Amino acid sequence: MVVFKIANMRCGGCARSVTSALRGVDPAAEVRVDLERREVTVEGAADADVLARALRGGGFVAERIFA
Image (cartoon, rainbow, N blue to C red; front, side, top):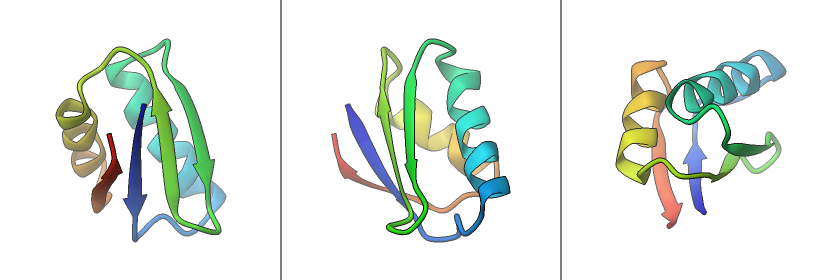
């Protein structure tokens, strides 16, 4: 499990884009978004660095806060 803080995730559209970017790396991942805290939790097989790169590629500023 990995948790990212995403400072520029502010709306439902952002949450969908974040989920899409993460599932592009790991289609079977369980992705939980907390918009209020601006955090996303990912449970899956992909490496945290690969997930972070996917988020950056989607335009999101992601800080890993738990891995």
